[in-house]
Length: 86
Image (cartoon, rainbow, N blue to C red; front, side, top):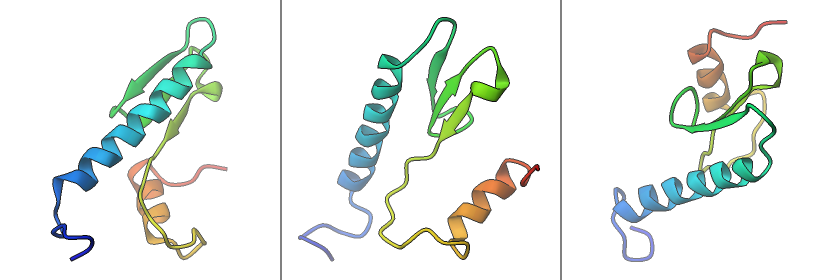
């Protein structure tokens, strides 16, 4: 246990959701004409634009390990999205 909370404490989930909302709100302030922000559709936060090349998806994760090419969740996310395209 950490700080008196159980491993599956609801506070962790609530804080993650709150953080995700703050990222979405930040993106809302930077919107340009005909863009929109979606939460929990294609990613945690999605910036949708008529031009697909300027659309983006943001994953908000709570990890303390360094992000390297061995980072398991990075490769899982790429696999979910159909792999890498060059």
